[in-house]
Length: 235
Image (cartoon, rainbow, N blue to C red; front, side):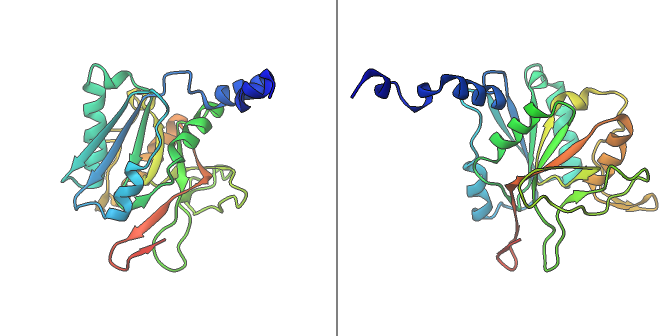
């Protein structure tokens, strides 16, 4: 066996290996704060998917459990606390993960790579569906339509990126810097059930984010389950 064979697979094509690392951006700071809002205990099947998430190698990570608050309140107050923190406020990413969403172990790594490739996007989410028969993919709104809408869009069966007007929150990677924009309405996330209207906290937020030029997309290669604990079905 010669020296070239002993150099290893990654060294065999150093240019290709370097290009791969550059695409993923792992040589940069990619610090992630993971926010999990929880009112009830997390089902074991979902919990195991959360703890199996792969974070970028040798990067700082912080898991933040927002326990006991309604989900819109949990997100808004958690992010306010992060922005008030002298260290966490300087980090790069917020990852929102909900207690009924089961992401793949490499999901975060894939979302970060997409963020590196698409600096024009403020948020990229994994691909997951509403619960129940005839569910729709949570790719909300056609950005090509001049009239603001949140119609569910088609996922890309080839696993590509689909830009949309709004996302669900079950497995989303956000640029923390977006929340430092003082033009944005506060609270950022608010569940609507009053005379003002009815709506979920995620699309309430995106109706405002979009006004200020922030864009989002869904990565259809990151397949996220949506767990119904009552029926024990992963949608």
